[in-house]
Image (cartoon, rainbow, N blue to C red; front, side, top):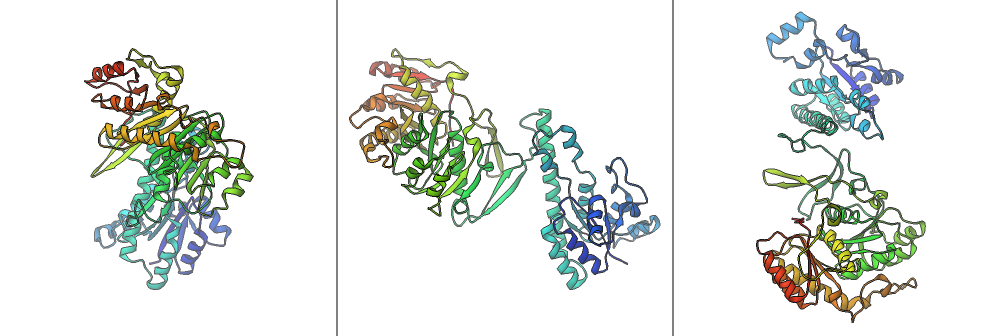
Length: 543
């Protein structure tokens, strides 16, 4: 009996060579629509699907392969005598290979201003049905969804006249994975359009692989990078790498953290990140000044870190970036002169992300894999406290306007610091960051000690390539008092110890969520020490 293959593909990569090889091996080919035209144009003869079914394509091609002579030819169990009798009685012929990939639904919904009707029209019905039928009967049928597998199948057919059980089983699994992902994309898209519940009883998420990674967090861990089907504009998934070696697992994770924080600010902002924590953040009237502030917070930790900037990098800033070793610099654009400077370092990765300059206006999903399951929540996106709810001053001393500005700045930064988190800020710059300690007082001590060092050492960093000097970055001078700075906390104080520690360093203003059963103790201590304290009512744990 002549072997038959049904070929109907949207992605026509390699299909002509595949079909020609089958034809040369004596296979009968069945095809549809655009695939048949493509093969005919290259001198390959095929049967039209209507020749097989005896029924014309109809409803604008919506119905063509949904027929017993197709699905019977795929699903018949060939060592089952009853099945053999039925296909003989009904005149059904077996189909031994199915090569199908589906209507380009992903490409359709990625188009700007795609109409709902167009999205619906690009939902494939017959294709997934054929793939599932062929995959279910993989003991006898070879199912292909990926052009990368064509050569492998042809090689086996040339060698033995058939495909191996192992190959058919593997391709079956691949086909079910393919149809599952296809259906999940459709489901996600229309659930969003319909405004269905955010946390359904059964959750299916689909991502597509962007690249294989050399390793994960550590060399002994394998890894790959996947992105959402419709990634949020201005995310790491939409960045374009224009220079440097391939991104690593840790690079991608840290770059994502830096981008998320810098997008919180509309004014010129620079963020330095190291091991998922910001090690310096600055806002200023110019992006160069903002970078100076971010650098001066912790000149040691920024070495080997990642810098995200929300304005173009020009030659002057490029010179400063080049003075230290950085893994990645991310910006909306880089001037031609800046590129000529920065690309001199072959390992420095440069990422262009125009939307990084657009502040985030909505949150998304935050996913965390746990053993045996998945935690999912909204991202901790919230406008500054003053925009969504009143700040409450709970002390006798009121904060000054300058302190309040730094309080809101510090509160925004502290959201991106691992808990327990404390940030010391002054004049739109972090000068001390205490991340990830198991109790809050240790984080406070770390941040305060770091702030003292920053003030003592800030004369070490000078902008040599322009008239700018350290004082123009807006940081305080060595003999200024730390009392001009503010302290921001991601969560409430269970004890007044953080207030007491802050007072030792001269801190005169504190911002925190409030909500502890012992808030009154911290308030009382602030009043005793002449410290202004503001409650936001919003906690920002980051684990």
